[in-house]
Image 1 (cartoon, rainbow, N blue to C red):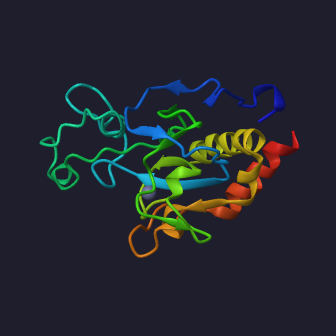
Image 2: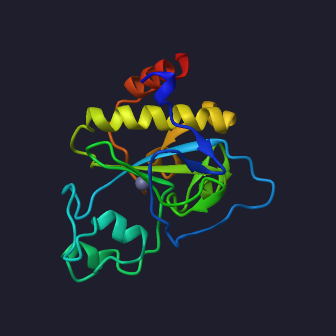
Length: 196
Ligand SMILES: [Zn+2]
């Protein structure tokens, strides 16, 4: 990706991506420095990608906007009433959607702790990749994610030292983004983005 097409962040919003507001957020605690990026995977139903409800809305978008029909799939009953979000969702084709302004606190990490600090939602940015623990992520997703992370590193420089996964901040409870996620490849791609 050349510098000309690099993503930028203005007032907590990523340029040139879809914006769909989630109601599932609140303010970060006063004087919080955003210093951590948390990578996740999600698929609804589990291990199905791109699935939509009868309303044509992607199930993950529906979940993040409290529109998911809990009756539409047996799995959905197990998460009925969940009020969750992430700042960003990256689909299998690399489409990026922002649901929560980076200045606000998205509800992605749940009970969590990073470097001895609890409540990761307070100080982190959450990125959900459409995927599962059992398959590789797509090239389009790595491309989009690398551009997004380069933009985040520039906007929130302290995050450069704290790129982590949900499984690292909620061990024993969460396993995503899973063993198929290639951290080395991602770091190399982000470094290339930053070189431009
Ligand atoms: Zn997660």
